[in-house]
Image 1 (tube, rainbow, N blue to C red):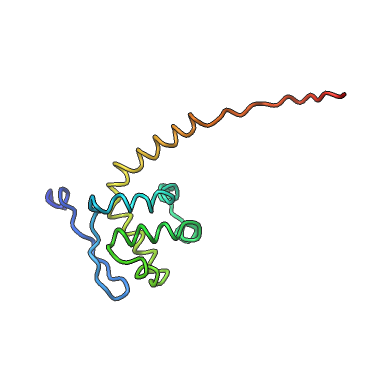
Image 2 (image 1 turned 90 degrees about the vertical axis):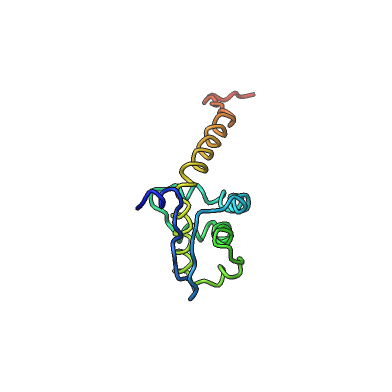
Length: 133
C-alpha cells in the first residue's frame, strides 16, 4: 500500500447482482442518513464476530437502509439481492468504512453508553421483612 493509498483510500470493486460497484468511504452528505439508519445496528457491528443472519433477522431493515445509502442505490435494489450478496455487500460497506467507525462512531457510542449508565436510576434494595396488620 502506498502513502497515497493511505491518504486517499481506493475504491473496493465488487460485483453484485451482475453490476460492478466501486465501494468508497462515505461522503459527508451521506453521513446523516447513514448514521440514522445504522445507529440501531451499531452494537451488533462492534461484536468481535458479527452474526450476519441474526443481525439481518433483528435489524435487517436498518442495515439494508444503511447499505443502500452507502452504495448510492435505491432501497428496492438492495431488497432484491440474494441473501449471500446482501451479506457480502453489507460486510464490505462496513469494512470500507471501518476507519470512520473506529475513529468517529465507536468513541461516540461509548460516551453515550457511559452517560446512559450514569443517568440510569440506581436500583433500590427491598428488605426481606414483611409486616403484618
